Length: 266
Length: 340
Image (cartoon, rainbow over all chains, first blue to last red; front, side):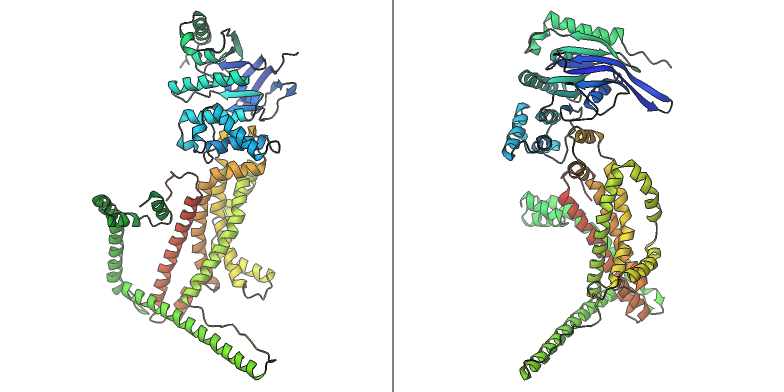
């Protein structure tokens, strides 16, 4: 029992439709250890985001449930902070104010004014955004916005960091920078992370385990791949690493051979 | 010229003056001339064309009160109205001076004598009527906004409440002010029993009629604006467990602000139109009453004076909208958005 941190048991969800309930997820079972970095990978529409939203508490499982540190998850909360795909910063607040909103909300009464300020600045420092504290989201690039989004999530001191394709909307170079930052942060803070991704390289580079999902409807976990590569990892060294390339091809084989998206007939 | 001063000028609707100032400082003179041509000369040509059309057209129309007045006659009437206003003010000052002298004399004779102060009761001039109308429309509009914005926010946040209120909104929205007026008049007369001269019944009746008609655009726009909040931002507020009030203040209001302002501007425009009609029908003091009195008066000057009122009503409506636009620019977080 000592290793139990985040447990998904028989998680099943039905969405009501005009033609009766649509089963999006079917019996997802997953055990995540503290400090583990888990990626969810699968084709579009396989219910990856649904799994994440259930852990976040934004969706309720029809059957089964999620337990975090012995407590059932049934509503959203800051101990399961979410980094959204399109950053979701409040466009009328500066980077600083966006993080400050979260900090003030979560540490209401626990931190003095000066402590709040330090904590906000510290988290923006972690994502290398100290140079643009007082800029509005519309004044900074997409990668920078995503950095602020991560800082906001980190500032909540979450038990689990949930990332829904955090780098999906970014160009390849920016994505690489952010992946490096994320590895560095996770190395230092040891957060438990669940990340959804479409990107095989990203999954192998960042994760301790890759959870590969079958196609929907009634999607579930197909295979789980342990990534036993030493940390910290370096993308350039790993490029020629046979073990790394083996993991890559495992994931690719799963996605494109065993669970290729069936060509829609007609 | 610094860009901040230019921004300020633009904010106050004086954007057209920028090229003039730049031209004077010989900053890219040809470009400024071009801008000036587009923003000043072309509108002026339009206005001149209208004036000449009016001048020629009006002369052809014979009415029971003489020829329809052209621009020159209307301008003449305007100066007359200004003069009447000045005369009335002079009379007022004279009245108070006489009263004061009389009281001083009394006191000199007998220090214990009771002295009386009587307020001046001359007839309101055209400009007094403008002030009355402006105060009335702003009161009605503020009252409507105080009701409509919170109502719109709760409607936008709760689909159930919206379903409950939507039919009522849709039914009351198209009701003409002229239909509300008799109801409001009778109800206010029954409820408000006051001899307080600063809150006369007529003022309350006009203001409430304005309120009833300019509630709806703000309610509808606010509802739409609030219900269209990005679902990701809603999720952010859920993850942060923001309470209702903080959510409204930090997320709902800023993101619905452009729609709310759209509604407020429509409301104020409608309110101003409604007020003039209400004042005419109910004989409540204000510009509407001025127009109606001139219509009843039927002198050879009446048509000209009504036309002055028409133009002034239009100009004030335009300025009210400009004022709202300036306010919107002031509170808008998105300084890049093009507001017009």
